[in-house]
Image (cartoon, rainbow, N blue to C red; front, side):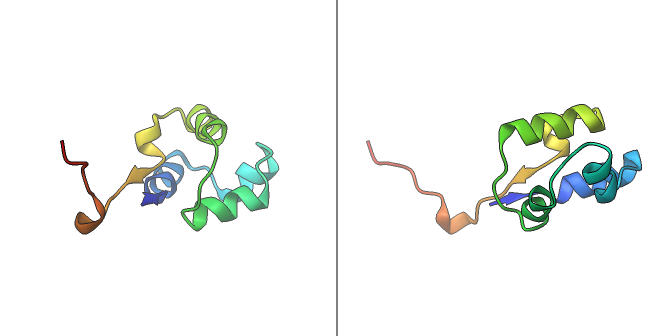
Length: 75
């Protein structure tokens, strides 16, 4: 599962608000809603956030898999 929890921490550290993402940087409210809901966003959105926040993708999102959901094909 994708989590954008690191994004909110990075934004707080850089003093950038959701409001600024919309008004100053042109993000849509729909994109902000998808980030809040941990929904899928494009790599372009991730790239823009990294540029605005001067950070890496690891500072934007994390990927977590429940232990029982990871399966490997048998050889």
